[in-house]
Length: 260
Image 1 (cartoon, rainbow, N blue to C red):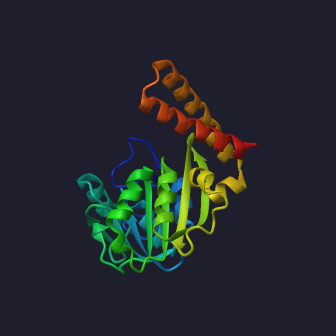
Image 2 (cartoon, helix red, strand yellow):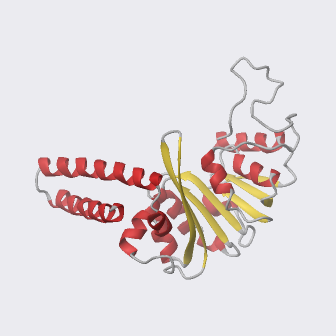
Image 3 (cartoon, rainbow, N blue to C red):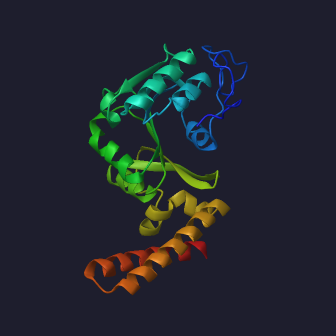
């Protein structure tokens, strides 16, 4: 989200977001969170952007103000965020560049209308569902920039199964949370993978980079999985418990090998 400026007692006539040379309604610069700034860094210059689940439309506003996007579409399914997005676009003086639309996922788009799609801040299963449900709307899209809060492996699997090649990944930490950003383009979907099973889970680029944040994330996951395995062992030997236990033990093995 955008960085707040001022306290709760700030007069309503003053803009409450930190901008450069701020006077409400003008096209000023926003300071995004580190997470959304990372997403924005992958938007090709001059792109026609569709931001799905846009919340307050911070990302499209930032992209248009910085010239990353030539124009944008901000999509929201919920009434509250939809109205907030409309207000933010209006206050930013960007109504001529950003269309705010209400609808589920990619249903707000016509085929070929956008060439870059961002979906940030959702679970991986939901992102994969949105892409799957709106496959016909991906005609003409050159780049997907996806930031799953959890379940990134489900997004990688969807991209692999539908001919989208991962071209970049980033991992970052902000306010104690760790986020992954996946960037994909049409191409050879298997190209980035050397060890498919491990890299669908870990990310092919992230696994090779093996950064401190990457290692921190997966050490946390191993600890969590081992606790679950111990709980499953203590609760008995049902078929479902055994299946889950084997699945987690395999994940622990893959991650421990990557962290060696």
